[in-house]
Length: 113
Image (cartoon, rainbow, N blue to C red; front, side, top):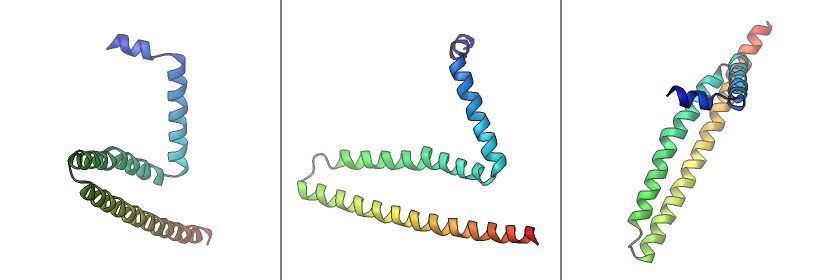
């Protein structure tokens, strides 16, 4: 374990780590909402997208031996559902962004008074 750490500990890795830590600290200090957003992005990346990839792989293996019409119907349905989900995510993200900006704008006005 110690040997692996010493092998990893070189100038390139130390500089990368220092720069990453500085950027994270600067981002966090300048805007605390980024902590929540980073955690949400990590959760979505790790669990939700990984689960989606696994489901798509299962469907792909399930449709391997099926008739061409079944394959076309299943994949068309998956594409349509995916487009609907992405559209809803975009709409909710836009609405959430507007809500946050409206709330923060009101707080900024309160501070000016």
